[in-house]
Length: 357
Image (cartoon, rainbow, N blue to C red):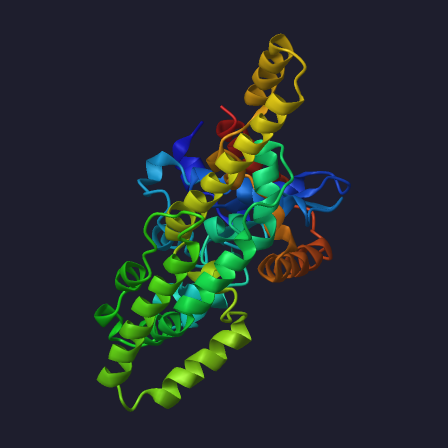
C-alpha cells in the first residue's frame, strides 16, 4: 500500500471516492479511533446506526504517522482539517466533555460536528456499566445466581467520591488544575483489596478519605462555595450525579482497580457454587468428573468478557452518543452527490489502485 497516500487521506478525497460508486452503493464513512481496543467497541456502536445508504469503516492511524496509540490529542492533530462527512473521529471523552471547553482539546472535540465521544470518561467506563455486570458474571461462569449486589456497590462508591469529584472538575476548569490533578484524586479514592466481608468497610474508608480531602479544599478556597455549586449544577445538566460518578472517573482505574477485582471475586464464588452443585448431584465418580470437566472448559475469563460487554447500550450515555451518530447519518444520507468530471474520476481511480496495493 502507498503509505504516503494512506497517511494523507482526507474527507474530501473519500467523498470523491464515494461519488465514483453507483447511486445504489452505500456511502462509506471512515471512523478513526485511538487504539486497538477501540476498534471492536466502536464497531458495536456504529453498527447500530448504519443504514442501507451509509456505512462505516473503523480505522487506526498508521504506524508511519508516528502516532502513539491512545493519545487523543495526537489523533486530533493528525486529523486537523481532514475530517468531514466522509471521515470522522471517535474518541474517549476523558475530562474534555466535563470541563466544557476549558482546554484547546476540549473545545475542538465539543465544537466539531465530525468528532464523536463516549460521554462517559472512556470505553472502559461503559464496559463497566453497573446494571450489566451481572450479565457479565453469568457469561463468565454460566451461573445466574446473584451473590453480591455489584450495582449497589458502585452506587455507594459513586456517592462516596462525588463531592470530591466535583472539586476535581472545579480545578480542571481553572488554570490551577495542577494543584489537584486526576492522579491526586485517584490516590485519595483508592479502594485497596476487595472482599465481600470488607465491602462496607471499603466504602466507609473511601468516604472518610474523600470527605477529609474535600474539607481541606473547602478550607483552602473559602470563597469557592458558589462556584463549586455552579460546577455541581453544570455536571448534573451534563448527566453526572452522585449515583453514577463511577462512569466519569478515569476508565483504567475503574476497570482495573474497582470493577475487575470485584467481578473476579463474584465469579470465583459462582464457579465454586456451581462445582459444589455438580458434586452434590452426581451419582458416581465418573459422572462427577465428566460434569466438572465439561463445566470447567466452559468457564471464561473475566477480562476478555468484560471488554466485550455490550450492556452499556442500555445506558443514557450510549443513548446520547447514538442520537449524535443518527443525526450525522441522517444528514449525510440526504446529500445528493454530483458526478465527478471525467479527469477527476481517472485520478481518483488511479489513487485507489495504489491504495489497494
